[in-house]
Each structure stands twice: as C-alpha cells, then as structure tokens.
Image 1: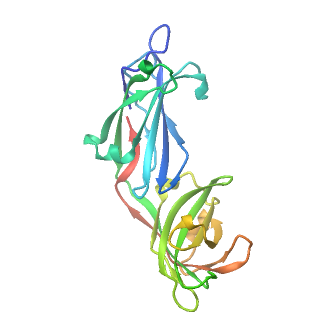
Image 2: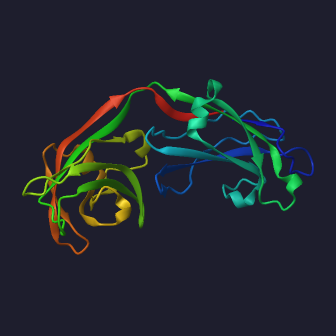
Image 3: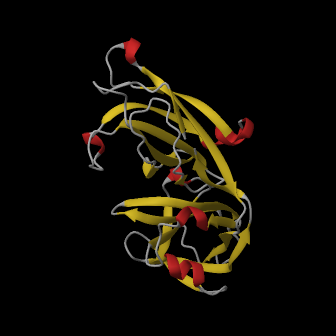
Length: 277
C-alpha cells in the first residue's frame, strides 16, 4: 500500500497513517458482512507513506469479492479504531485489481462522514496485488440424494447447498449445485460436482459445523427445503467416498439420504493469495 497526499489531521506536524483492510463475498443475493483481514504498520508524520506490511486475504474465483480500505491517523496505542481519527476510505472489486496493468490501482479516498462536500477528498491510496505460485488445496464433492420425500406431484430438479457456521446464527455459503430431474422410484437426485477452495477457509477448524441442505426446485429462493444433514468440517473433508448421511426436515423427520459419491482433496497452483502495498 502507498498513500498519496493524505489529509493532515494533526495540529502539529502531519498525520500518522495506517491502513485497515476489509473483505466481503457476494453470491447472487447473498452478501457477507465486511470482515477485517488485517492492518498495516503505522508510519509517523507522513502524508505520502509507503507501507511495508502486506495483508493476507483469500481469493475465490467463483465468487464476487470486494475490498474496503480505511485509512486512519493514529492517536493512541489502542487497537480500537474509535480512538483514532478517520482519514478516509475506498472500495474496489477484486476483478478490477486483477485486470489492471501490473495489478496495481490508484484509488481516491473520501470521508462521507463530513458534512462539507469540499472536505470529502482525503488523498489517494495505491494498492497492488500479487499471486502466489504455491500449491493450494480444494475439496471436490459429488453428491446424490435418494429416497427423497418431496411431496406434491411430479419429479422436479433440486438444489443442494453447503454452508459452514461462522458465528451463532450466521452461516457462510461454501458451494451449491443443481440436479437434473429426480429419477426413479427411489426419487434419486444427482447433483453437479462442487468445488470448495480450502484457502478461503483457513479460519475454520475441523470442529466447525457444516450443514448440507437439499431444496425442492432449482432455486433456493423458493424456500422449499426438503431437509439436510449436519456434520463437522473435518468429517466432511476426511469422510469416505460412498458414505451416506440421513437427511431430516425441520421437524426432525427423516426425508431421505445424502450419498457422497465423490469426495477428494486435490491441489492446483497460481491464484491470488494476498494483496500487498
């Protein structure tokens, strides 16, 4: 990161700036909350700082991702941002960074907290991105659901979602896939293959709760939940191929079985691993 002509908020001397990096993911109508990914060091008494510290952030090519950069003038040793003066902020889609020349962009900082329009411009922040060439792991899942109790008439297609619990009552979507029409007397749904990138889940432990849900119809927004199964992240990663898990509806009644027809961890190389200044 590199600041340019940052606003001076100190009475004596210049500001003591540092950068805070936030990230969020978008998947259709689902938008995750902003999550802090890290902070740079503070450079004292400088309006054109060149920060040395990099901030690590995951990259998932199959999700829309955005970054928010906030610049503060350090006024205390506290990590509480309310203890420091807010200089300005800017947001950018990851795709814009990746497609920029040299994967480097110059962004205008503004402060919309100020009432005066003339004071909103607060300088610029230059951001560059680098790609990691080290091997990365991803989990491949091929699921089926059989003996489905769908109710109603006909044999529709279905949707499966895989989510992980990140906080009490909050779930992060990891992957989703559609099936063709349900087949046979056993009401068998075969879903498209799913890929879960492990780099984005570094903060997970093997005990993190994961839920797999099956919906009647191709769109989750229909809210026609058939049922699902819960397990730990470790059990999902390291379970055996061919295993089955009973599916239950919201009332606890059994409504079918999940079949892990494919489950393996593979590696690939070269995708965006961190952003740096």
